[in-house]
Length: 297
Image 1: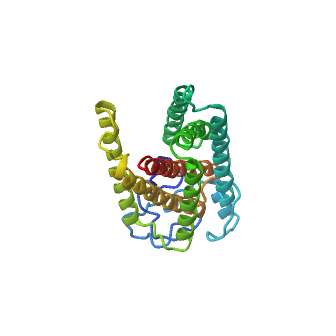
Image 2: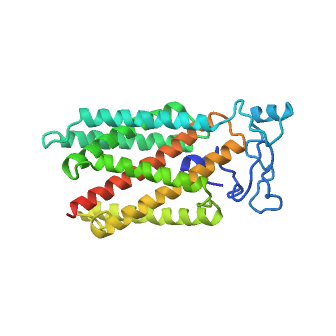
């Protein structure tokens, strides 16, 4: 299965044949149940069959179903790495909020620093996304610069547009994360080929519309086509949050498959990176939605 996140779609939790992981019960060190004869299944079955730790476990007599974790990614690894990236992001965001004032005399300088940090963070994210292995230094640096941008933009919205907007966006993001996690674990969300295709088509259409809107705004001035303001802005803000929730479901599926198939431990950094990207997406959509709602009052 390929993820919506460019991180996961490069390697780590994806099989190159596309959708092999959907509707299967993966077993560490072996082919997933139900993929025999499937046009989506890889010949080798397990994308981590070459993991020396997984092979060592099998040679020592551990059955494929036994959850051995020596040298392999575990849920604790994913939680710890995600906590690290989010912790760094929160700390740098708090520092940016405190040290970069957004009053009339300083807002231009602070906004410029925030945009510069966003550009650097985007470059670091793209570099990591196209690398075939996780580089913790890149991921941590991305989180730090992204935190500076979020701190500045959150301070601007909170202090100049809608008081309390940042906390509302944080609560909204946490609520979406918890709701999707519960729904995924309860089986209410079925991540299959149809779900994946729908999400990716919707995401592509959403991003194309946002790019067109940005181009119209850049060259024509104003709000472009109005996709990020007024009634249309509210609608697209809600769509953005829903897409973020769908991305989370895909990410949970990728993490689950990575653990089940015996991904190397360093892949936990890719999981943390992908989840951080998705949570930043959801937070920004909430913040934008709150700003639009308060601007329309």
